Length: 255
Image 1 (cartoon, rainbow, N blue to C red):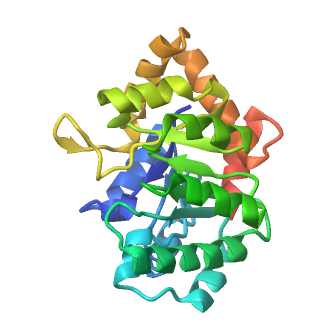
Image 2: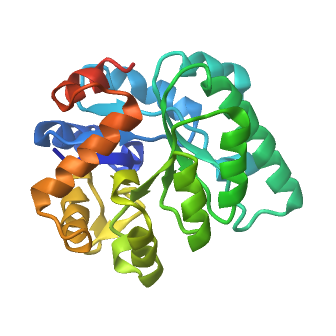
């Protein structure tokens, strides 16, 4: 079974078609959003899906132009066990914007720490700050999406109990490949980050997870099936599932 833990399905021209394609292929897909309003709009459309789950998000770069509606986010958070994309992005932010992002992320982490959830994190140029905020808030399980930070910090993230999701863009870059080699297999998950990541000139879709599994089997010296099982096991442990056989049922019942 393939798993895509970070895909912006709502950003495709025909999002419902992408969701149906992933569902038919049996690919567990976490459809992240950038705004609570996007989650609110898409949530009713995915309720009957067994393998596609919509995540509640507030992208850090949105905070430059969009006020964080704490009341709305809190209300919607009660509907789902899936959170993302949230986090920090200091790549172009000035000090004032950095401070605003931190305030917003602190609010979000306080809202979602009430129970275990799947959490997908943006952390560009702010990896150590995100890690500190997770620890300070007491969030025990989370996923660093498309990590691009310092190599040495990877060890700290692993020691704190967190995960990393890797995508097709990472396996094509020298730094991405070095990062992947540094992460222990038991902390790796797979993502596409479609449609923002491209594969052969087109937007990546959940089915493109296969290319990542193909790459990992050489890095880890395992078969395709063994890599799939490792990713499944990592996801199961992250989600607190008792048995692999209960994977689909428990993902479905998470909302």
